[in-house]
Image (cartoon, rainbow, N blue to C red):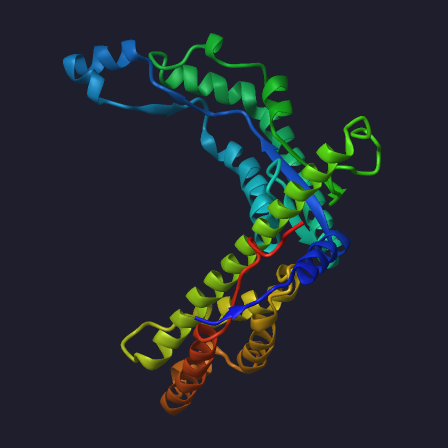
Amino acid sequence: MKVYKVSDKQAEQMIQNVMDNCMLIWIRKSAWGNRRKLSDELLKEKFGEDSDRIRAVKDMIDPEPVKKITYWQGKAVSFIEKISMPYFKDGSHYIHNSRVEQADDFLRECAEKVDKAAAELAEIYNDKVAESCQKHPELYSWDDFPTKDYVWKAFRLEWSWQRIVPPMGANGKVSVLSKKVIDEENRKFRQRMLEDGQKHIDACRAAFKQVITHLRDCLVDPTKTFHDSTVEKPKEFLKNFASLNMWGDKPFEQLSKDALDILERVYAEDLRDDKEYREEMGKVIDDVVTCFESMEVVELDRALDI
């Protein structure tokens, strides 16, 4: 296995590039929990001695209005996870500067949808509570439900942006620490960033391997079902790779460009309709897989010595 050697100087430059070209985003979704566990007393009444073996839950109200809210919360988080990489602290994510405006616009759109759906739920909330209590009085009581204002305010989508800065920061809050402590905190900060970089490089390569080998397998095996997503997923990955390659995976960089050049002219419909074309593309993609599997391995997490 060949290793792409990263010198201390290169490692420091990679860290600086990430700090200069990326932002951190913190995102949080909050919600009122519509699902509750059935009481032990009720389970014992229904199932007797077997109640200890039973685990059951109930939806407090019709779940559909709640799902309309959580759908947009989930969509927002999924989008951020798709275009970002996890940061070692606070549940934040690195996002390349080129995607920040796009991400912020999309999150604002999702937040508006969340607020609108939460307001709609508040309007019908009391009716939904009454419906639950009337249909199943043995399961529900008005006393079990919070107010509609509480439920309305419980659903939120929040996020914030910040620059990536070492422990010294720019506010001088740690200036009371000794130089020895500050130097050690900076060393740990850079080491953790490199560990993040290693995880990001490994994750990108693993994701590409999964979609490109699946495409190759479908192309060379005529018995496999060939879906549009079989071609579109590796295309989508490669189009996003430039902004995900925050740490500069040099061995993979050129291959990713070459693979995208190939796939941009390939469509699933043509591959399904033309047997010879499918076989030809199977060989081309197999070559891509072979090149990918023979690439040098990048090792970052042990590179820095400061």
